[in-house]
Length: 107
Image (cartoon, rainbow, N blue to C red; front, side):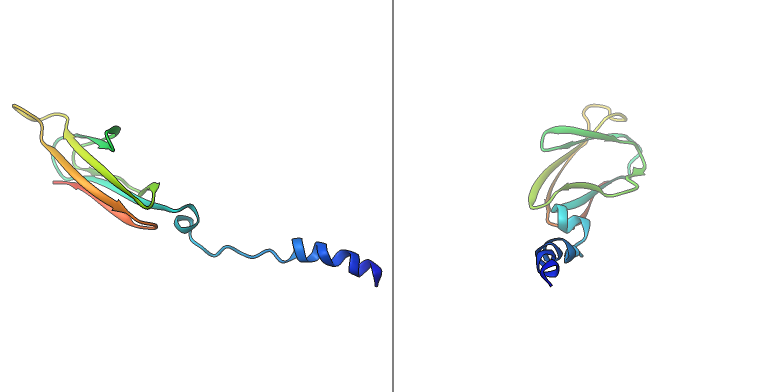
């Protein structure tokens, strides 16, 4: 009986672990953004004034990329080639909440 009483605190601490049934985006507080370029020209993608990537012509991201949730992102797409005088520039404001899935579509 004494051995059982000595083991009881360890069983309570280590034997009754709760499962976390939340999704990855809930546990890590993230949202997702995907990029699609429906034009015949490549575009540089800037997020919050930092170069993020170049999106090729007529392409899309095959998966949603993770970003911190609870933020507003300022996305700018600047045409890389195929212009005569000046490039086309598109600006997007994306409010990303937990588990959101948003698209940036250049048309």
